[in-house]
Image (cartoon, rainbow, N blue to C red; front, side, top):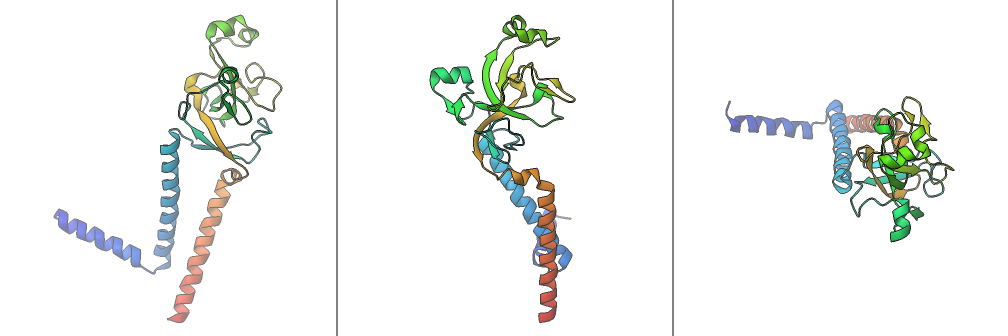
Length: 222
């Protein structure tokens, strides 16, 4: 079979798929359209943010009042739109984000990908020697340097105080564990990703009902 013949058959099949009024084909077209739109949005977000996930949802009150439960946060690479700035550095440079000095970072606790990332403010950066010589050195069998983080609404820093099931006591955040930094938060929109499965089912049900109603209307008119 020549390339020309194959292309002609493919074009013919595509045209038949696009123009078919069969309910199953119509449903398939609608679902493909939804997938294409979602995929396009995801690609655009990645190109803008330079990291993935490019959006996260606030699920706790640890960042109140600067971030609230249900906020959708756009995440960008840690050095995009300016280098990552800690709270300590922000006091000198004047850099502020989300109501306080420094940047808010999104990181994988202890590098674990099995739990949800944490979104807290980067307070300062400490090297291994500093950790070993501080009270934090007593908490870890293998102390190492990294970012010290804290939720704006929490009384204590994460390191040495926050423990997560299956992960353990939160360690200083190594640069490799950072997903990105928060750029902007949109109130309430984050409730959608929290219920993404339910929303996807709802969209599919609406599409199916629409196609059934449309098919019956065409049948009556025919």
